[in-house]
Image 1: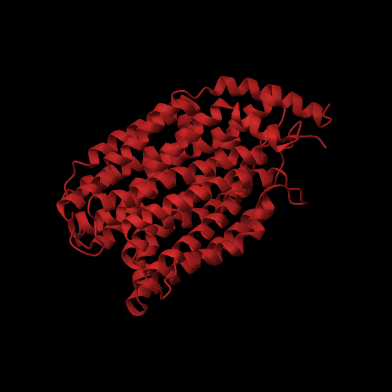
Image 2: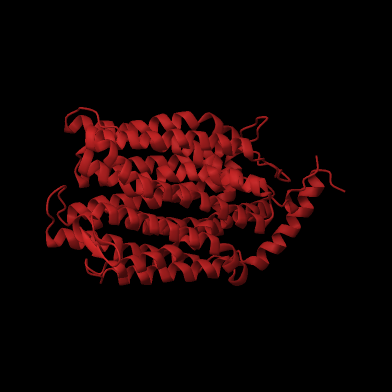
Length: 467
């Protein structure tokens, strides 16, 4: 069979189908990053320090699962391909465990903590089982680097649309169900709606996409896979940069509910009058993700002009500087706070599709250098970087809250308010600056990748019997 994937131009329907998968994943990603810490402290009843420790313990284990899942995917053989079957068969377990994670059983403090550890660990495992194959799928749908950037943009359009759907509806649904059934049941019912929708969307992604890329030479052993990736310098650099980006996002998003509930509170807004903190935080979260979408849309044209590396560098530097500026805003300066939110959202959104597109380039670089391709293993590192960044950011969020004296559902001290403000601004900005430093050393620019792709095209065509 001839391999023609180097020149495949994907149609709009397939790009949309691929994007639906991250709409589903991102609904839960935003529930985890924006609502879960608050849920555990203010609804479930666990201390902030205990939640921070739980995030560290469970997510370190979870991050280790990602390369394992990538290795399993690379060795999967089915009539549907290596990666697509997992979207079909893990969809329903994903939904069921998601509901359990946001359920509040009638247990004592110790029982609740054990329940949280078990259900959250299960949630992260099913998330890995569907998200690693989904991420890897992009690497085998086409080898056209421009199409990969386009596909990554559709992915993140889906991701931010899913996140936006949650931020625009979650607080209202939680209050709607919670007013009559209690806040705990409000969370459970709300997440149940998102869980059913996520399962349906994963199945639609399975049905609407196709695996095309056949490497010239498949890897022979796990030892060779690990040896190849250990020598892949760009992989290590991108791993560190992506972890830093996720620390930035995790600290910022994890602080939003606390920032508005305890620091901003109810405020008067031009043209809208007095608004409650719950309305303001829902608008803030939604505008943040809408701004991210603008950044995603800009990623392809800007990177086409400046290059992926330079675009990444500039965007994250701007995110850091704007985040530092947020620290100096006072609670009544609500219009300025929202304006900075838009600018940070746009600059932060630009880098996310670039990361995934650059991982696809790194997979090609590995095949070009070694003659073997380990798409699942390399793309699982992207999920691993998400988990590590999320782990560090989530753990730090809980520990910072505890260190600054945070107590749930009471008026906060000046010290605890300072900690909340630092989390969403300065500390998040430090994560963005770390990404800037790491990406400076990334070497796979557009000229380098053009040469690599030419050589790979020749090798693949020869191996697959092309004329």
